[in-house]
Amino acid sequence: MKSLEDLKKMREAALNKVQMREGGKDYRVVVGMATCGIAAGARPVLNRLVEETAANDYNCVVTQTGCIGMCIYEPIVEVFGKEGEHTTYIHVDPDKAARILEEHIKNGHVIEEYTVDAAVNGGK
Image 1 (cartoon, rainbow, N blue to C red):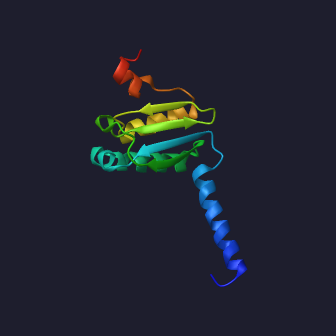
Image 2: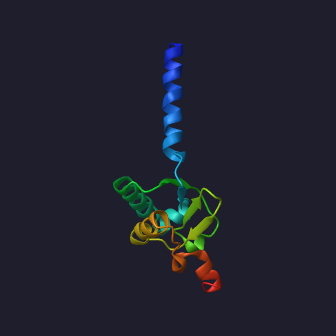
Image 3: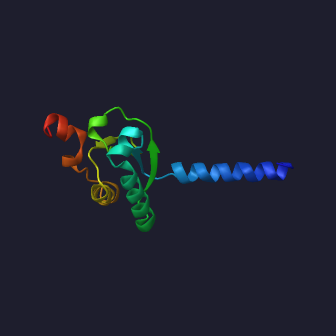
């Protein structure tokens, strides 16, 4: 950084990165990418979510996080809505990830059989 102008450019670039991540979208899709998630196959899930979101302009941002705390259910994808609603999808593979985007993000329908609630409570 050599000038105030350089500092302004750096600030603008940082704000653009935040905008890309937080982006004013209706949904935030988070993939657990701790060691347990990666070992269970989270990387292809994350890649599919990013590819499908870019190709179809879904109303969401896709991010990653560390340990979600339920290693037995990895890969885990969490969907957070603007109104505070939260859905945890478990044992997600790339095909399930694409379906989550289509059904939940695009159409607003939670896929109950993929959720942690279905596994823990038998869907009740």
